[in-house]
Image (cartoon, rainbow over all chains, first blue to last red; front, side, top):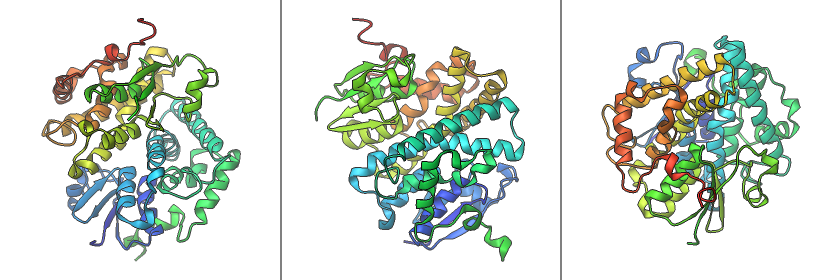
Length: 208
Length: 208
């Protein structure tokens, strides 16, 4: 397969999911940072040509142009054996990817964005914080009886659901309040080649 | 395959997605309504036994207990030929399912719930309405050049993304403001066996 190119951004947990999957599976790839402070219609032409909505992440791989982080994770799991999901776990992995999009990947990411960018009024932040806490409660309960979200083995479901939790303090929340989630994050961080988003997502052109 | 059982609720667009898929594919099934006004821990024992989080929908089919509406749609598409997604459209269908969970299936459903149940303060409703309008703008733009979300053919992506739009007026929005979305809804409603959620989701035990 040709070398994939990932368009992403250091502050995007959705971009981080994809780069972490590539990193964990040791898949060589190009990583191009897109400046999200530039309005969508003014972003680079080569990026706009491949991005359906002007959003990150986009992965260009083997003649495919893929967007939506959890859809990309599913594609990668189907094409790279190191990320493969066993047949009997596919339904539960898809459940967790779907849950993530609607719950923790919404609540924590939007709360963090709003608090760090002063983007929304206080009642919205309270509403998002309430949802984020409910979502962390759900994860904490599930992780009281199992090591990873699909059961005993690490999967793309763990990559997706943990993505924004490395920045939980930015959302004004303390991971210690959800001890099973905290232990699960430690198990994820112990995966070979794992890196924190603040390291993994550094813009390569800025550090050159 | 044994007769599937769907646990759902007449006000849940996520439940409607699943029942509509079963209906369009003429898949015989049982439909059990769960009263969402009853706290999760007090819902019927047989429902709690199969529901991971006490939420609807849940589909019990062929020894599988499936939750999360878009994950259920993917499972159905893999197991029933009438709902099958052609190989070359699988990536784009997954993108739209993922987008739905995080965008229109979040914004419109939460806005409708908040307005009809007086659930959230006004600034939250404004914030949700702004998101809902942005999401409808996205759909309207895409549907200016194609008949359905995956291209020329109806798919589970259309089932998912349209689910809450039949109730757009409950969310204080007028479909006429997004004419391409309105035309697309008419194309969906023209599918053989299609039914509006207010008809399809009637509680069978209440009407008996």
